[in-house]
Image 1 (cartoon, helix red, strand yellow):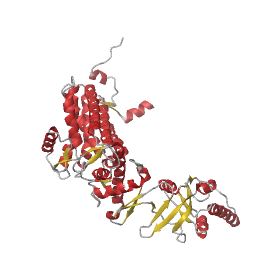
Image 2: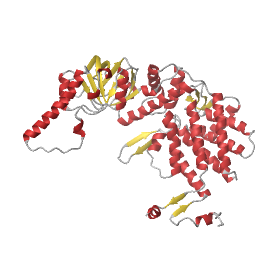
Image 3: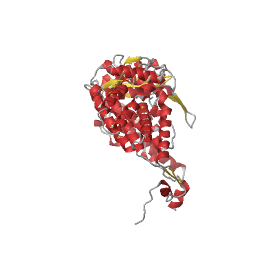
Length: 526
């Protein structure tokens, strides 16, 4: 039987010269360095005193934001482990629109702590197993300390305020929170609501302070012709996912026109068919028609003459929302529509805001109208509003915990006590997990201008004396998070722990990095 090479040098001998191999120690160093680079990119954005990042895109567009998911999405990375860390932020951010920075920092802290244990002789698989047991212990502690959910307007407003404080865009977190909860109240069912039932519309050229909540669906569109009505009361509305023109006009076909008369006949026949389509809208009894695509000129003429309001280029999300609000059905073309597909309700145009306010007897679909001087600012504010909506939805369903880093210190305190009952080297992993959790309050303190070590010592002392919600205040002082209304959803925190632990343990299992030269790969494929 052939001997199997065991040493690193022997294994390297069977790898082609075009393939670079790092080995276990180098692999850990490379991976840890990649993760820490991602962490340092977003660390300073954490908390109410977090800083913004200015991102200059290849096309020259400039983006200013403190949203870590956006920052990392716009950052080009080539290292696969760095990409894995970014995916952790996205996993949390897509679910809750918040907590992504915390997840990234915790992932980096866990790997940093793991590296220290491995250098002391603890096997990576033992560290990974200990981390998972520690996470499960922390998860059980969440159930013990959480404040049950429910529809408490005051608490939910503070939850949204905690998530959106520090926008630095002309609106305080309390202003954003007020808009969010006001809109949520309009669509809630008992103790929960669906954030997708709330539209967000942005407008530029005004102060953020004029942002408001409309009880109706707001649509920032104009009629296709000025002669059309800008108000329809108790009217019937047709919704078309597509265009009001001949489908053949969008196809690439060749038509041979031999003379002027042939061209005239062809054009007249096409115009007649388009007018027939518009006549179909009128015959259905529609007072208004909304299309997601274009409306041909001939159709516009017929509809305008019949006093039918027509609006084109309505995005599908808005089309579906308005149809639900008016009790209608979106159809693919006018030829397949029936009177049963029509919705009914009111269209009123506000000439000052250049918005249609649309209201019917279907599902309530309010709109949060975000205003600001520039498109970049309203886009950023819109993102904060989305965050507030998701956070409030999660908090009302699952409950809340104290923020300001208080939860992480409390979990760390409980894990250290639990570690005393753990046998073997996994006890070290428990304690390392506790150390990693404390990176969150330390970062909050550092961003608030405190000495992070002094802040952590003060927090440890407070928690050891029974103040489970002691955390870092906005001004850098030690506060009781619950008494000062700093709340975060417990399920978001649970997801942060899970995602960060999974990412860290996955990286720990990597003991080698093989980089295959592109030229070598292409030659082997030939």
